Image (cartoon, rainbow, N blue to C red):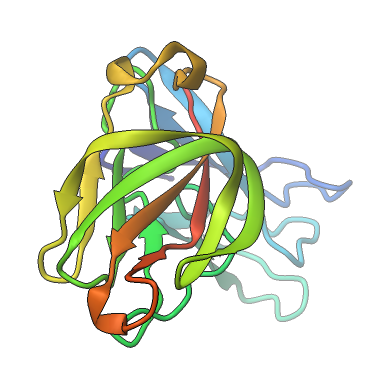
Length: 219
């Protein structure tokens, strides 16, 4: 079984042996990086047994996959497994802002950002409709800063100029080629990103931050 979604493909290997179980089965997620298909994930049943044949049928969507088995040791009539996967790893705290919620930072798109594709977009929401910037660095921390928490320690690299949030969304496309040498975004690199935005209606320091998002880049 095969399922294609955008630049990703999920391929079943129903006779894979995992953890000593014969024909338990697996499914492999590959991503096109502009040059070749790269394996980024492997799925298998959390309760696998012999002859499950995981991957009998499958479907792939945006950050989600559903995979079925023919056999199931517990019930002998098959099972269905649902998986979710995100682009990047969230960490640190997004403090509540004047919208009534914390600003969550995400990177919509395929599982791993590709250097060749140069298509990373950062999005923080909900935020007040005010200016803000994104910045990144190599170290992680959690220190009070303004009305929120600074999630990146050590040296930081600001992504300028500032952008203005609309519909409570702060968004920016990242051009890898425009990054400074010390903050180069290259294949195999891992950087942590955060949004920093104005929030005068909160009545405190006048600014706040999103959570942190750690991203590893592929070729």
